[in-house]
Image (cartoon, rainbow, N blue to C red; front, side, top):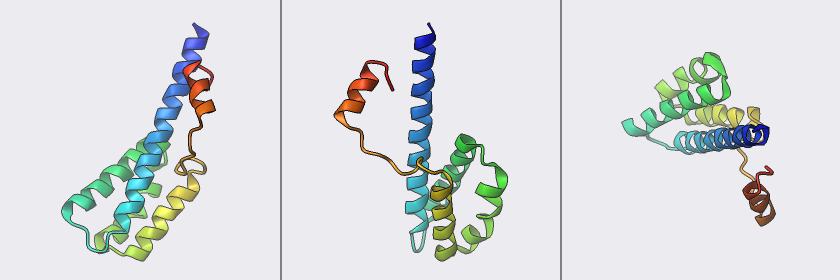
Length: 111
């Protein structure tokens, strides 16, 4: 039973990291948009909110510092904020290639 709990815990951690990577990639892509449409701004807000939940980063990291640059759509500030997010979350946000050996270990329940 403990092995199942450890395996499910590891799977949840991997899923969380994958979600963080996805959100960071979306934020980085969206802030590079020179003239966003309404959908892009809403996507940016969604992904910042999701990152806030996943990382427990709080309001300052994901809302307060972003409010004015998003309202003004200031690409240089937005790109700098996105880069800070990627840097702050260390290895999460920098996907590593999965090797055949890693996939085999995971299939055996050895993450």
